[in-house]
Length: 91
Ligand SMILES: [Zn+2]
Image (cartoon, rainbow, N blue to C red; front, side):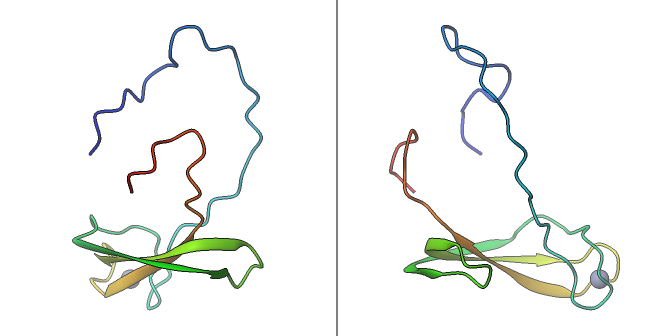
């Protein structure tokens, strides 16, 4: 976990609008549950492309986890667009 302060906002920043963005939870391929245990391993591969939904990405990230409902283990693969922006480019 990082030591970023996740509560509130930094002093001096103004209110910002918060448009909704759809977040898709990973799902157990066996029982469709979205409840899962903590990720036990993560790998990141720098690979640019376009994901199945047509969005550009810069990295393919795989996270090992296990379904809490039925115990099925799986790898959550996400296509992440890590272009930096306001955050430090250290990931
Ligand atoms: Zn399951």
